[in-house]
Length: 367
Image 1 (cartoon, rainbow, N blue to C red):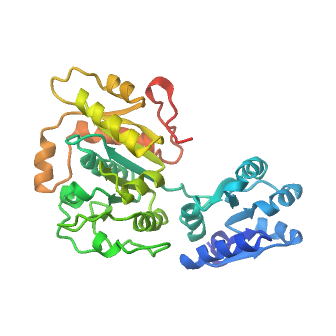
Image 2: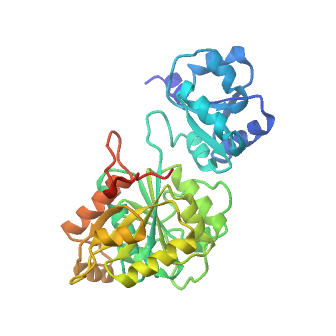
Image 3: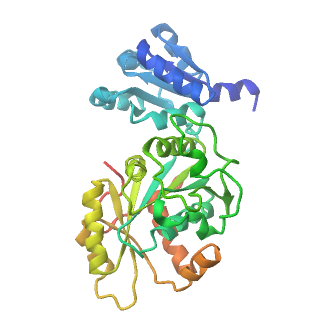
């Protein structure tokens, strides 16, 4: 492909006369090392429309752009603030555009500007795994989802948010691998650089994990900065949130696009899970994944019903999981890995895939 065509596909153009919006977007571009061209005159919009890879249309110019009746094209985003939500949604349809509202959409804005989200690329999916009670294998399931993403040829990162979990790297035998851990990243703020090659990587998974002996919460700002960075370079980011509800865990709940609650197949686990949901105010939980237990009298469907959640998967009882964790090898039998693959296919379907249908017909995406 000629170089000038590459440059055009990488070019990001902002259409706005809003000085504050322009300042915010240019700062986001500087943070990821990309230049954003600003167009504020209507007579220049038509040229930019066909000459850029991604177009950010400020809410202040959206009506004027619609009046130009330009041909539909991919890679268009309506950009505004939370107060512009209703108008931005109205304008998105005639423009064929996605909506980015600031500040909550800052992570997606950085992804668009950096090129991690392009007309040809799927956006990142951030999956949070909550442990409803002790002993349900939430961390093991988080590892399983990450490895499923590898099998599906997706770029994946796994982030350890569970301070008391002992370090998710142990489950993959990566405790001695060199690389940055939370001890190095705990002071991260705002936009940070590419973490690939700096954090440990094993079996195709980039890891952000605890150092041994750490008992300090990772913090809200650090968690947000790390997830934002990984979202620019990966297709799937799995957060092992665990059961703790510190600042880092609550931020992980907030930034997750999909939240999965791992629950045991017993009454006590259900009671603990309901308390966690109430405390975390995790109304965006996608669904439940139930860990089977031999001789359990409560069916997986009844567990999900009692939590008021769709049932997204049943993890079979696998005695080999504990042994695999002790030896630091990739966990799971064929049945167990197949169950993880099925859950991931529902949470983060690949290009062209049709999302699975939840039991009881509930939607699987967050409203």
